[in-house]
Image 1 (cartoon, rainbow, N blue to C red):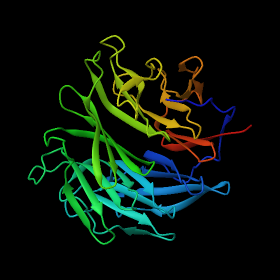
Image 2: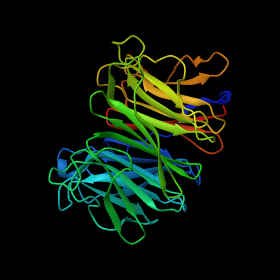
Image 3: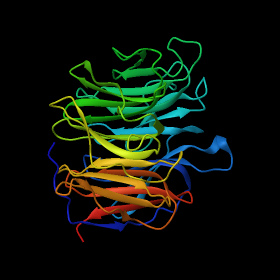
Image 4: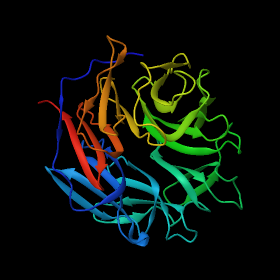
Length: 366
């Protein structure tokens, strides 16, 4: 695994977004134009009004794409971009025929439209992630949460959209139905869709899959560190480099057998093995883990997390020292919903929420 030297850039806060309040958010950079988009759940006194909404930072100002859902959404949601750079979102829809079915919409440039039918899954779901494959086919991965079939409760449910309709309740080849899918994260890279899953069945573990040319390959099956006796299910993130090496961020107690710590491991595409990237990173403890991992275009890993004071901080992996750098503290404030993403030309954006307000920093030349 070759890691590039970190850019000598600085973090600068961009124009604050104050027009709305939010309880949760995800930020991603549009790969076509380098513009950061933020999908968020609106913070409202009445739960029925807690809708999905999206904004983008364009030409030095925040542009609203408006409410994306018809009503209340769940706390777990995701989005991606098609080949034209239009955002597609997935969320748990409380207004579907069965509450919390997974619904998918896209923004056509002026308004939000359904992708296929309202309520893609045949019953309610919980966690979900969204990606396009190399043939621009939309793939939705959900934790099925129904109790009356056809899948087992909390089984991984794969849904695909052919341009006209959804095919749902598909299962992962080689993955047992009772393997509880607690949290999923997906990434399209190098012509393949990568899917990482936290498995919530004792002992907790990680699975990693790759979809290429219509075929699924199991890269990691129920993997856990042999030195670990516990893996936290609070968060999972993933990025993939140009050679297909997969960087996975999660929490376990492998450092001493008792203390849960954040860590990053690398799955080697050539060797099919897993290795640690630096030492575990101490941060906010208990069920307060909240982080993102991201690779710059030259291959430098960055880890965005909350320190023990719950302040938002970021470190990069120093190839020469073979260790994580001293963390840069964005601000001495308690933050949550951390997101990190890079543009193709090497800049980055980091976002988080403080007191239900969005804060975004840009990483660029001083």
